[in-house]
Image 1 (spheres, one colour):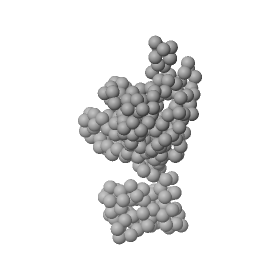
Image 2 (tube, rainbow, N blue to C red):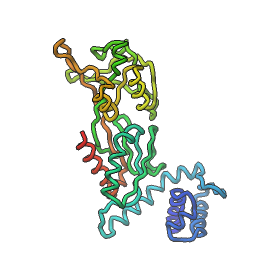
Image 3 (cartoon, rainbow, N blue to C red):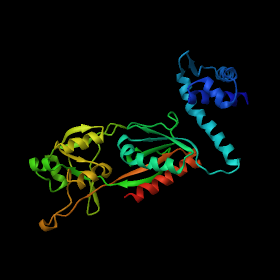
Image 4 (cartoon, rainbow, N blue to C red):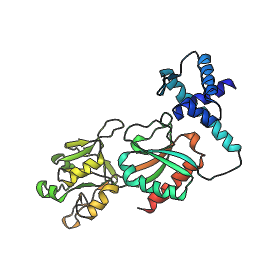
Length: 306
């Protein structure tokens, strides 16, 4: 039991940022929490925390140990909740990670309606285009597209987003409109670099049910999709931009979708491969009411908006 108390004091101290805050959460004195952690470190034969007057940090051993034991404390919390009187009311803090563009243009409105429907839930929306570690960053849900999925996470599809290839009227007037995707290698292409692994975002098409990727000539590369949209609007080149950004610009005539086909000229339309977004979570979070409620709500909201 002493070891378990030490683990809980250690985990809560890391989560709260201080031993004093952890002690308040656990309902014990700071001295008792500190002693529990000290006994745990002694039994392990290593230092877990770096204590200074201004901040609390993890040692290298502490980082490894926290990643392993945090799930134990969460599993115990879930076990206690499972036998407690049933209350499916979503409540508490919900940390959601999302890519910046999708979070800004799509997820934020869904979060707004979610917190209005579930006032006992507070949401922290972590906007980040890089890799996400659910355990180290205390993330309940991460919203990812297909290429970001990991075997360790459970994924539920939220929405399939069209990704049209488009250019401004000024670019088309200056450079002409490509009639087929194969002509893109002779045009100025604005390419998105995926921050997760640094590779360029491929432009995939479907023709007669067959997927293919044409050769591209990248004149500008950026890791921010909103920047690429602005470049496309200014006539810098052709970009592949999700419909949550491009649709209103196309509707206003500021961007023109390419490869829609021209029946009068005998040119068939070429389908752009869509982008699927998923809500991902660790297995032990599957039964929490707040996670389940958010995913269900977001699925309904995004699909009804299509």
